[in-house]
Image 1 (spheres, rainbow, N blue to C red):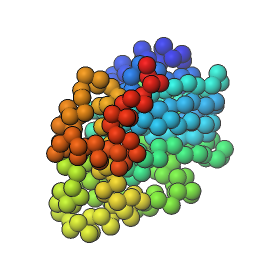
Image 2: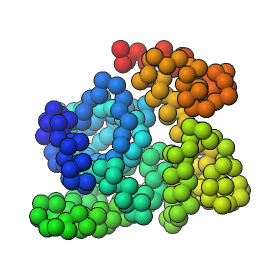
Image 3: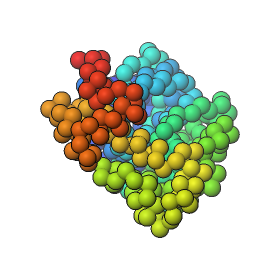
Image 4: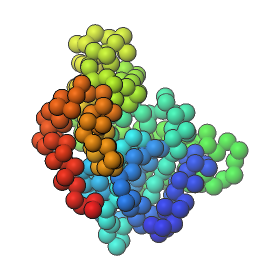
Length: 284
């Protein structure tokens, strides 16, 4: 499947089917500007390499790597090797919303920060055996094929979680709904709420207990996740909205004033918003 064909078929096919497998991807759409993801994509890299700008940081995807791409992230493919080939399992945003209790949501915060990990050859082969079964189900014509696809996806994500656990100690072995609820609240309120106490209150927990739960399950404090989400959105606005000045972006993210936003941005990134925008010469 060529890059042009991927661009044409990607959204139409996913939106029509809700969940689908796309084989033999030889490249990903190269957006003129960063693209904010909407649905969910699980990418299994079969051969070659792909350089991807993910949340404004270049990552190189290698053979036998798995990548989790959730909604609301900033992504753009930069370049791929001539032999690059991957398999995608893609879910539309509405279909993903129906799976709020699915393990695809568990430890989502961890996968969003560290979205790729390596598989051994045996693990890679096991993953593809499940995908082979999913492919048969998708093409079976059964009226209930989506139900079975969700069940197979459940098994696949559980297996990947187990593989991830072998080498990543930050991944929670027993995720709870508390982390899910924090994630949902964060994506809903991050533009207006940056206080840990607000999110603790949403979960009916004390600040201390809330912080301990999130740190234990994700490896980072709630404050870390709040700052990360705000900075990602700020960078997106700075990069893709040249008509907005720094004060406009400060207002958009509900900072007290331009100076407060600039101090926050510099503390988190090492540069001012203006300097960051000026540094984006590779998009010219």
